[in-house]
Length: 73
Image 1 (cartoon, helix red, strand yellow):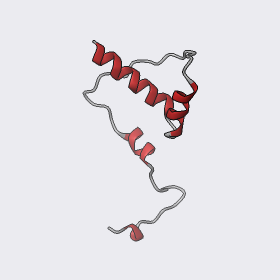
Image 2 (cartoon, rainbow, N blue to C red):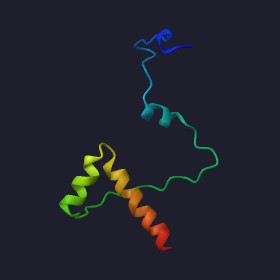
Image 3 (cartoon, one colour):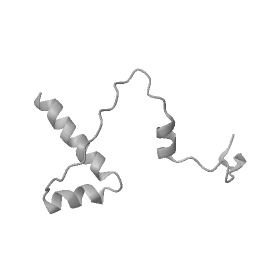
Image 4 (spheres, one colour):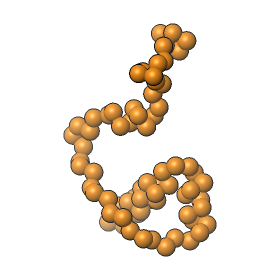
């Protein structure tokens, strides 16, 4: 099927990546630990850099912190 053959409607809109990712079933994976809300002071230039990469900057910061803790053992 070619893109031009796909009929998009209000009931069946074009799927975006976020929609697809949410639909993936987590089978055999560890449960995602709950998150906590904290107040954290970060240098302005560091925060600006993470924000400049677009939406999801808090998730990226969390990923960097997780990688550091796993590497540090």
